[in-house]
Amino acid sequence: MVETSPHVITDPKAAGVTRIGSVNVNGIRAAARKGMGEWLAQREIDILTLQEVRADGPTLRKVITQLAEAAGEVDPQQAWHIQDQEAADKGRAGVAIISRTPPVATREGFGAGHREDEGRWVEADYELADSSILTVVSVYVHSGEVGTVRQEHKMRFLQDMLDYLPQLAARTDHVLVTGDLNVGHTELDIKNWKGNRKNSGFLPEERAFFDKYFGEAGYVDVARSLAGEVEGPYTWWSYRGKAFDNDTGWRIDYHMATPALSQTATNPRVDRADDYSLRWSDHAPLVVDYTLQ
Image (spheres, rainbow, N blue to C red):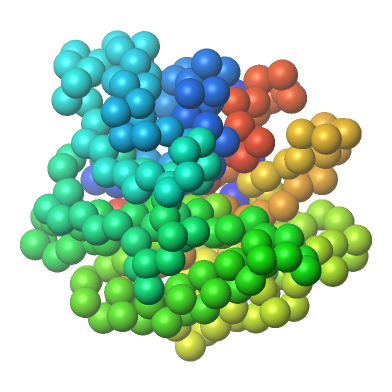
């Protein structure tokens, strides 16, 4: 079962494990001010994917260096290798991958390259000990809004993903797609699913894409496969009302892996803060260990 972690985390990484995390930071500068560095210093992360960075490349690199300095890194300038894709509109979206080892290749975007999709897809290739390639993706799907052009953008993006995912799996050895996908796949993924059946994020037509991602496209929902058929564990809670206090959340952050990679996954955790006041994003990080050769 996936564990929900407190703010102070005791979770030593086992030997031979690659620890991969993903989180929507809801603005990297704000997250850093609110305590992201304290979390990062505890987690022994090897690869971390970020969504909704809301910063240009130089600003992102400056903040990551500051986080490394706060964590006592010997050489903060070299502590993390950073690949990002900025959004076309300043202060919006933005995705990144930071890693302890450098990737052998990186790519930005996919599909037809629509302007409103910029800052939503970046991928990096890492060479494993057996010379195979692990491709890690950070993706931020549109939030959408029923009856607006925002929902049209979201639906097209989900279709582009469906077209692209098999191509990605065919050209590399292992794929891990991580990020804020802004859709709860099943009734187990949203606490108040009955009240959200007509809202973006839980529409039948959105959820049907996830049936295909985890069906014909051949990917595995890592957290769900390890947690089993239980409610959540949720990764996002509205800042409104008592959603966090009552755990009225949504599971909309995913690790989507190709089958062989999913078989190496262990120790999934949602790093949920102890208290509302300790949150540094409206999302909590999803962290999974992979035993890679």
